[in-house]
Length: 416
Image (tube, rainbow, N blue to C red):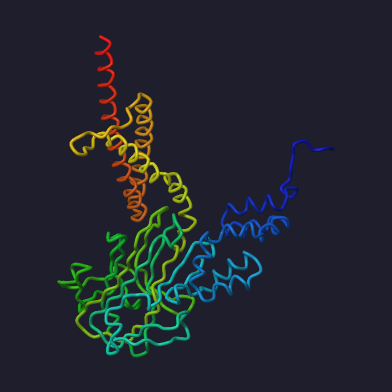
């Protein structure tokens, strides 16, 4: 009996299946490869894995002495993908490491100790630089003796994958003789373009969790550190063991939004007034938040929904600019501009309607995610931009409407 209008998946060309798989995620491809031999074959196609690799990968690898060697040694895009997942590669002349998060293919960076700003690190009396066989970097920083312990790291958000919730972690170890690094909560913070987005306290020693701290003193002003008050208990952030043998402690989270090009700064500060010794710093790692990648796919969709927002704002500002040209004065004379037309007023109506819809949606998104601080703050930033654009569009429409009405009255008067 002949089939009519039916087409089984296995009858689709392999290239078609590969193209469909490329629109999913690496974890989905791994699962779908078990559907059939055809899917398994399509799942290893370069068409699929090239899409999972960052679009600027060649540019990133060009700053690595091993970049060209890596590209020449792999036989497929899939092999390149998993190599970058399992074996971080040094970039930026060895000052950073670059890798991919295996489940999502999103970018991960670690800023080496050499790439951080560590107070007194250039003074041999307080810090020394050693090679460590367990480290991916040529050198790590080892604390000899300080009271004022401060570590800062900076990275441009344009280097990261957009629409992803990232977390920053200090990666470190303790030497056998370490002391002064267990009783006190330590202040950490994150800033984006100078605006604080996260601040809390952490504890050096996981074994002390739940205990009260009486000996430490901490600054009131986190970034200026000019006054001190008695310390309090840690906010619940403690070191965890990593698979590579190091410890890590979470510094904070932030949502890297589409089109955002800013400077992210992290800071660790322990200003207690007694000596500390034996902290070994490998770096600060910035990677997608574990367990949140799939959860944030829907946020990516929301971000895509609003990804034209900045363009919309620019268009609105352009229209406002054109209108205001006629209001500018040069040498006492008004500069002539294109006369407003009734079609322009309709365009403003459409613009204002669209911006009002965006304001409502962003308000709803912000209200729905008040408990998710990173998402809430990102939505509020976009909401404030949209409100400004809406106000200027409404002002522009009012000015254009007045100009149009005045011209119509003038026409009627001339006819009279």
